[in-house]
Length: 465
Image (cartoon, rainbow, N blue to C red; front, side):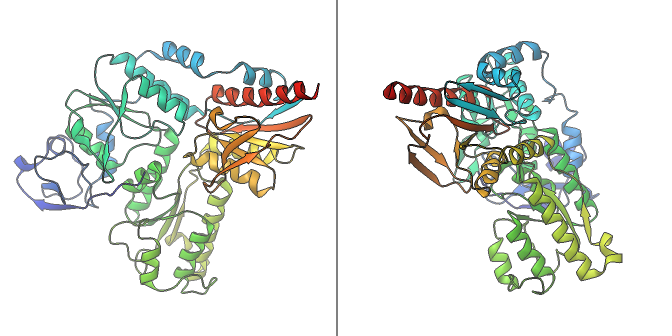
């Protein structure tokens, strides 16, 4: 969910005016003592997170936060117990049967082919397991979470049943005033923005950080861009929690969703000589008004650029955008000078890449249809659906078994988010189904969907008997 990040004003004051966290850890590059006050925030209010500008050293702040006594990212010693509980809740006998038989098995007249890589990735499993540990460690404390732990309704509902509460949102702003000293706050697998971490640190709460290490790797990349005074071109969705967090660690940035938007930026860099898609500075800023850093000026801030990405985007598209930007900078400044104007690091998540590669392989097989299972707000799952749609294979993206039925009917989403319904989605007679699931999807959710498929085909067989 997109948030309105408030701009802060800095002023030189005495040390006594500094918030406790600022006095405890040095996080500013400036030698003058500074204070932070957010626009629209009174001195007694803690309802919204503070926001920070370029003088704030986010990397140093996070480095010191991770070493504070109220911070934990490694769990609390209950790993075996919580993993056993997760196995009972989320594993699947059907998926085990498929894996034991080379990822292909037939139930009646339904043959299921399971993608080679699918479902829970290591980072997601780690995040959920640490969240379970937090409830075990703090059985009586209030536990909050800054966003959904992962993009899967089944898992998020389970945490809600464990009384892990969402930070409420009012008018697009998270209301951190509900959090009291001594409460526990979980940072989800996507991470949290710097201003949110700063707010929580000032509140002296117990922070349980489940941020995926691959996301942290992207943060390190944009920090390097910032240090070298490169503008970060982030391939992602500007309203996605992960991209919001990544942007908070960047200096200047612009977020591009796809190749078309990257082409527009590169055409602007080249003065309209690439494909003519760009226009005036004013139109540029209007087009990207929700996707650029404060005060962004395309005439100044595209002189030196670096590439980063939301870890769940299509691997091939991220690579293609990187090559496009590099070629644009070569054309603008010369091949011999490109390293002074372009920087790139490999920040594509292994799990995302593996699931996409497995999907590309699966669409080459002879299938009647593909069932894609994953949260409807899951970016990585949407790209699995995209691969199938672009290959022209009937593909149905559902977030749970509840989308199937009654009868031979399904409610599903297309890759761009359109919700559609289809009658008689399962063909008559023997069928072969390809199955995959997003990196946030438990095997049990896939099993429940397949059981619905088996039930429909069993009823069909009985009617024909």
